[in-house]
Image (tube, rainbow, N blue to C red):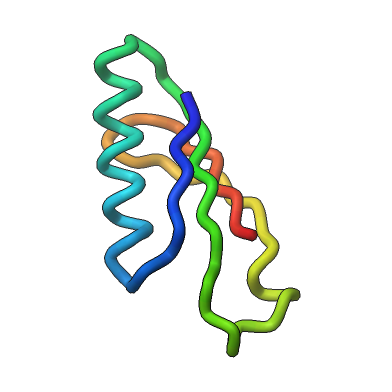
Length: 66
């Protein structure tokens, strides 16, 4: 499962994690992808582009920043 979000504030990441974890639970999956698009122009590209793995509510989340 993949969830795509556009960052609209500090709450966007947490909202995306909760939403994706809920979807994964409904689908019976243990991992998924969260793609977070950065809209803040003051953030340099070197900080916008990243890949992390984290656990949220017992689910493995592959977090992609762009």
